[in-house]
Image (tube, rainbow over all chains, first blue to last red):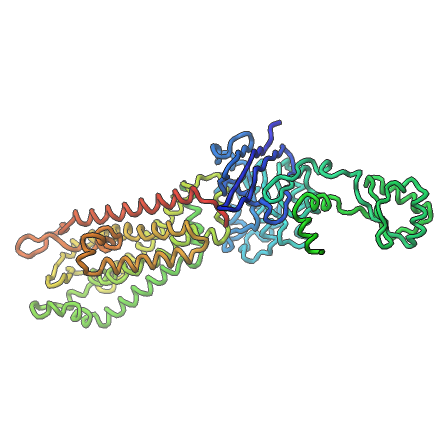
Length: 311
Length: 293
């Protein structure tokens, strides 16, 4: 199956600033492709190049097997996108905004289609309210509705959860999962929220200072056998003794202020729990450290910032 | 293309600020009409003071709808470009400021088409503004003041146009004014491409029009034959030429004639060339522009 997006040696300079540097990646059909990086890593610039808002300094972009430069309109007909803030016409209603962008995309939408789309993003009841009365989350959902109104095969969402409260973030996450599983869309979602990406992405690209630092399936990006598990118990000395004579001794990494860190396969956490309880250990907490976050920090300059901050 | 134009007009006419120029024109026209209705004679005496010693002037006959419309056009066609700049300067920069420009550019529409539609919408807005002005300045004045032969004072010459020879001249003058104002719209549109908010292009357009108008009106021989013929502001008031008729040799105006049509057409050509240059530059710039807003 040919890739939906094929980016080769993409580079963008803004005067003396290199925003994207020799970036290559591939998005396959039905991927929820997570595009990760710190703020300023080059995610938005890359997405803007994918959407023809910015002209690359060098490199090639193919979407649906077509060159973006030569087949711009043909490609954009099959792409829906929200870029950073979903800025819409605030003096128009949600319905009018949606209708306007549908017509801009070359379709003449029936009222039922527009309402159905607003229903999908939970805005049907506010269809005829002006957008300037909407919360940030509602605007974000309306932005996604405008991106989906022409039923695109590829949906690109740039930081879709920015500025949202936890409920808003969960709504967007569920919408993305729905689009992927029920409507079979290919999605490219950029974010700096690792935890969100981990929940929705099937494949991931991590960039730093405009360069690719890792790409692949989420399951292969970090080694599940190398998960750090943090164990907190009532009596650390007793726990230490139990661990020392158990099969878990080789996995013990260090003891920090009464807590134990074990490097192990996260799938074996239930076994460890059972052995500890059977050994008489009173377990307060047993939790895997956020391995993706650790992985991300180890790859990017964010790690240096954390070090500098803590020092 | 038509759908895109409809969308653009829909956006323009759903914004409350769009109607400010219409309200401003209505207010200005009504103020002038009221003033002339109640004290028109004093105004005419002042305007024709240089002629009143040589001629008997029948003020009651002169003060009719056609003359009032002429007075209003003389006054307003200098101010209206500023009102046109309000909308044309906002057409691209306003979208950049709102953050909607990027949503338009990622739709399957070429940037050239998008720009042509935006300029087209500005021109339609300009036409509607002039139609509104025509309705108020000409037709309302005809209703309020009645119609008669039209007398126009040119320096020390009084020109009389028969009442049945006036209306086509107004149609031609408004047609010309549409092109003149579309030139200002094109300038504001071009400046709008370079800006991220509409205040910059609106203020810049108004400033440029004011500076060039002053330059056009100055009587400095050095500029008269060098710079002035090429300034678009020097040609914006050429619509007045439609009210100057050819003479029959005995001092009477020939109906259906224009004194210097080639000069008007030349001015029209200059304005059209400016429009073409401004719009082409705007499209070229926009097609190369990185949309970062």
